[in-house]
Length: 131
Image (cartoon, rainbow, N blue to C red; front, side, top):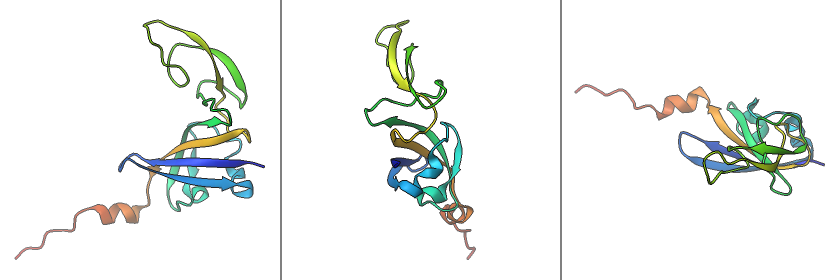
């Protein structure tokens, strides 16, 4: 029984929206990887294209794009997702989760990469009328 909280951000406006998916609505996300582009209709955003950018599991362990699979691993990190080094050259072994969404994932982060054309046209300024 998969249950996801999907945070969809819009880079143009800087806003984000939380969409909760349960059971049959959540199954299209299982098996997807970080970086994949999905249809926005899954996330109640028809005609949008959405890219998966990360997530975390029930214990708050972050997903890392460079770790393959959907399991937890102890990896030596020198920066990036899951570790923020305090000194130059510092490395540390940290637990991170792989780049595949499984039923153990609780939060999925995504961003809108393509909006419907009608919405884009309405945002442009109307042509100026000559007097």
